[in-house]
Length: 129
Image 1 (spheres, rainbow, N blue to C red):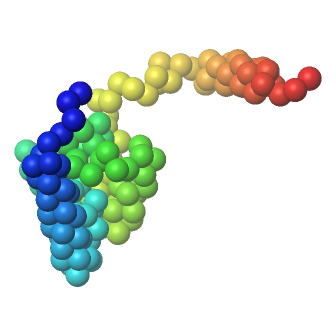
Image 2: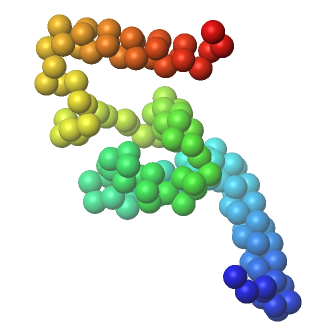
């Protein structure tokens, strides 16, 4: 990687300062309206979606501030927004990630027992004997 020139460093510093100033102003303006920047980011992307809804993975992929939030942070943000009436969260009936749907209750119990055995074995593995 090449060492940046003084002009490049100066331009980078100006970009960082400008971004900080604009973001700070935007946060203050949104706070006056009772919203956080993160909430606004969610609402903008939902408003742009043709149906007004987005699967979670599409929403987080499109959000500007998603990189600043952990996966659980995004979930908590959406939970609060749902609680406050800003959005309505629903479970997708077409989402095929719910892998337990084809399992019978007996199978789920057996799976839980097996996974518990694996968890216990692996947790204890790192413990001093």
